[in-house]
Length: 109
Image (tube, helix red, strand yellow):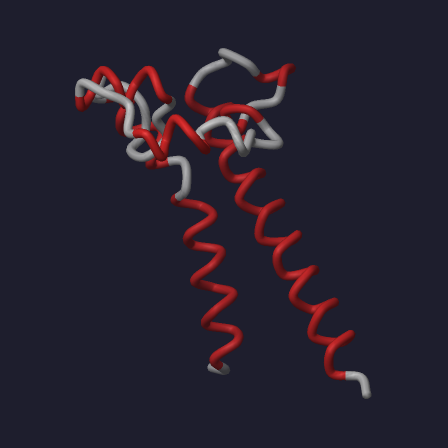
């Protein structure tokens, strides 16, 4: 099997298991998924908001808030998982497209 085929299979597996990071914390009543904390949650976890986080915390906003579409909001774990898979697929497709475009653009003399 070619290395590139193994890469695509690995990416497909990661796409399919991506909802686990959101579903498990919800199942165990553990709060938010690890690393997806806002300023309020960090303050609750550690007792303060780091200065760097305060300074650049609002610099970036996710294009799809909470990986959810308005039509699917609050519809249960299946829809949450589906939006995670869709977001992962979309993110990988955009990233691969940009890399391929840049590769072709930069390889031309």
